[in-house]
Length: 633
Image 1 (cartoon, rainbow, N blue to C red):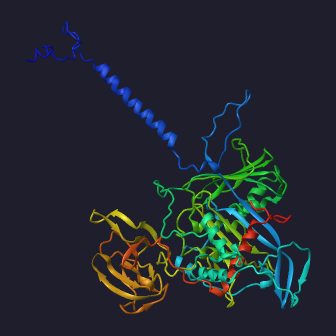
Image 2 (cartoon, one colour; image 1 turned 90 degrees about the horizontal axis):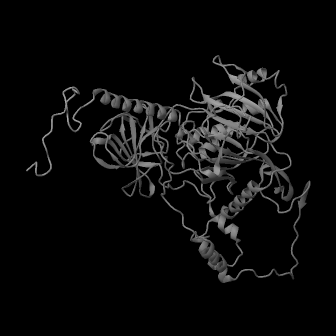
Image 3 (tube, rainbow, N blue to C red; image 1 turned 90 degrees about the vertical axis):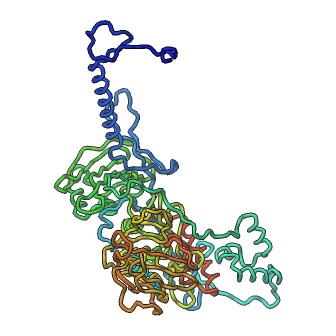
């Protein structure tokens, strides 16, 4: 059967080529086999080495092409020296503006209305993408402490000095506005019907329009035209609730800091010492740099059009970057370079590889160097010499809405408006806008009718929420998010109904909001457990605690920020952490992204005036700068 199928008898395989005639190639060659194996192994080793070299240190990421500026060497000519250039590294444009703007402001002074020129200090900048010595000594992140500082305050300056009531026409000097009664025979033209007024009141009471929209559309406009405008231009729009926006996950996790280069374009003549101090050089570093440059570049200033190129690298002692090398260019011509030695001193060094300079400031984006939102705000604000009290106020405004321990993204930015310094050098914060992942969150300073000064979002609500998202000292480290996961102990896939915030044993746990204690006891896999009942169907749960605080018993009441227990690892737990849940009508929701109610809103009597303040401050942010500009690189 086999022969009929085409099979035939053959000699056995052999390694002996001298056994005589062996038909049809039945001989095996050990040398050929060994050569094949060695060739394969050599190929694998060479490919592995090539990949290792290619990917070693590859920890940068690309930004959208619109924001990208790639630093490249000039095209090599015929007589250009043959040198090996660096791999192209993506860099992004950075915005760095501090300007003085002026506007004609109307103020009330002793019953009289006066109009005069008023200067304002405006900052518009990209958030710092590297953490330097500027922010090495900032306060430790503590969300509960931050939230306690969001309460309203009284005015610290004369309201006349910080008025934002813009007068339409520009004036020189100061003028006084006087009013007179209209003649009795003068009747204003009718601009709105009784029916239109009634319809407007109904829409206002139903909150169909926000206060800002009402102000923008004009309270005396015909309501039918407002409705028609809304139908065509989407003026009346819903608000997306409980929508989570997350940046792309970094699979590399926490890694060591890498190098990054910052290239600054000098727009106005600037002292070199000030420029270095604003970019992470300590006072001793500044002195070293100036001493090293004394014979090469003795001038104390950098002229307009010059460039400063700074290479940053990790500090072996602290978790921040320090300047490794700094190069000065007058125009596009290299003038001097100083570099950091192993002993920590700056000496003259060789110039770096040439590049083409852009009109904008640029900086390499290294994913390992991106700081947290919290530290980036401090780094950026200190660069612009804001006092620590103002920076702390800015950070506290966002402590409820944002997880400040997240890293920023390339292109995130901040805008700040302040009054100019008074006779004591103090400035008043008037406005702040933080843009993260393309979404802006604004807060406006406003003095309400009751005399209290606070910051409100465009809808007239404070930044303070009635629940704290990370209710433990220091905020903890997020170890497990809300959502489906494989249980670390039972290895089954199920819903993780809260978030796990790791912290050392004994770390205080706070009440997320004012509440009645529903349970305070041992609960099966939750270990030592506290459940709080808040208003409007909200409940919060705190599990795996080492100990429940004294006096926390079922039926008792607690205030927001009150200690209710201490972090532990009781129950079904793999380490010290707080399992924190938020439930609405018994349904679990993500504590870090749920849209929480505000704790305070402006009363109706302030809404229209506040809407005008919003409109006026936005107008100031869009105005052209005054002839004198404070440049800050």
